[in-house]
Amino acid sequence: LTQGVLKMRRGKLGEVTSSPQGWFQSELRGLTQLLQQNTIELYGPECRADLFDGRCASGGSLDADDWKAHLQLNAQGVGGFPNRWTTIAGVNGVDPTPPGYPSGIVANSGFFTYGVLQFTTGNNTGWRGEIKHHASGQIELFIQPPYPMQTNDEFDMWPGCDKSIGTCKSKFNNRLNFRGEPYLPGNDQVFFYPDAKS
Image (cartoon, rainbow, N blue to C red; front, side, top):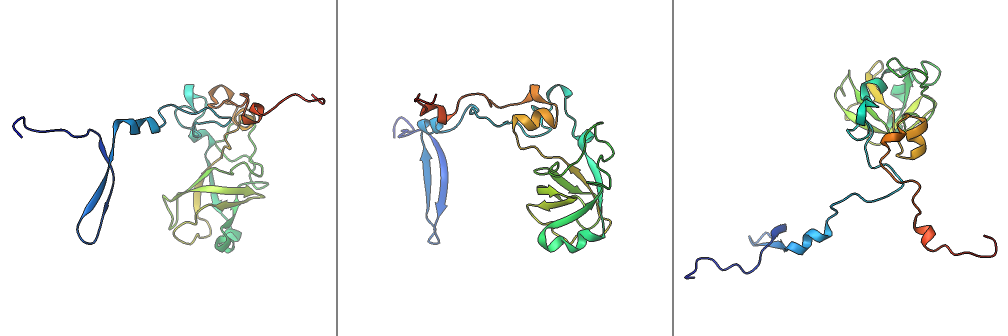
């Protein structure tokens, strides 16, 4: 072309697929494709922050180190491994308030549900996993550690948050940093209409 380059369309390449024959196909995304992306946060009743992140701990209200419990597996924990259940020494009755916790905090059943566990000794040192359930001195992990757990393995454990306003207020006393809108009317109010009972 005498003028150099003729631009037919303008955009960005998206998904690219190839074939064993050597050809490939690319998706061309135009400028309007950006309109399909969320550029702002959506309103909702649950908190949009993650526990102990910059927004949750804004103003120094929460420090992950203050909520860390350093615990150890007891002998019963090894036998429960195939079912992902692990008895933990240091929770519920043995040491209901692990060292380092703020005063007045008690690790009752469910306290560590949705929390995080990280091994500090043993074959799984450094491995970090999410806690599916915590009750009666036992925890269940979403994913099993890569290596079998051994008696006396030590780990750090942090409590979990279900992202509700009630948990934020009663468990962490962090209501001012709650990043949700629990009192906005939901879809049920859109279809609500008065009747003889209301």
